[in-house]
Length: 106
Image 1 (cartoon, one colour):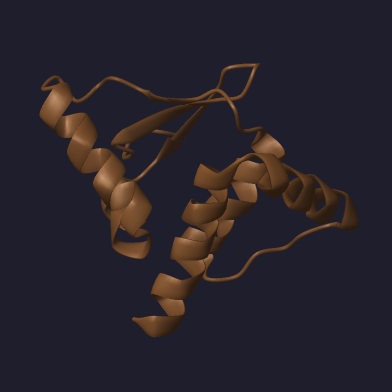
Image 2 (cartoon, helix red, strand yellow):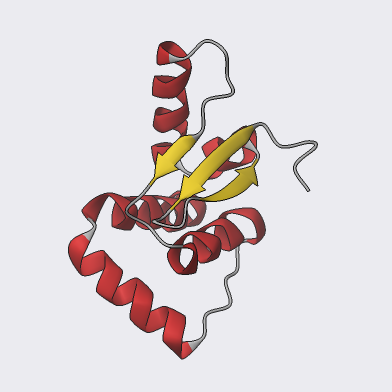
């Protein structure tokens, strides 16, 4: 349900809409904080989705799970997808690393 969410992502080639909470993501991940600041300076209406066309739900959902709960449940299939994904997508790797290290240092 998205009635209390304030950020919308459009994920992957299937363009799946995922709703989240800007303040939680920004507090837990500096990359998201910068992304939201940049988005708000460009789009004043606040309802423009963040399009992440190069990431799949298999990668994005575990990231959100970790950011929201400080834990993540990964099947061996998802671990393989994520590890192969990081070989080709540096920006998403940075978001995962930032979320993990920000939490461990903060």
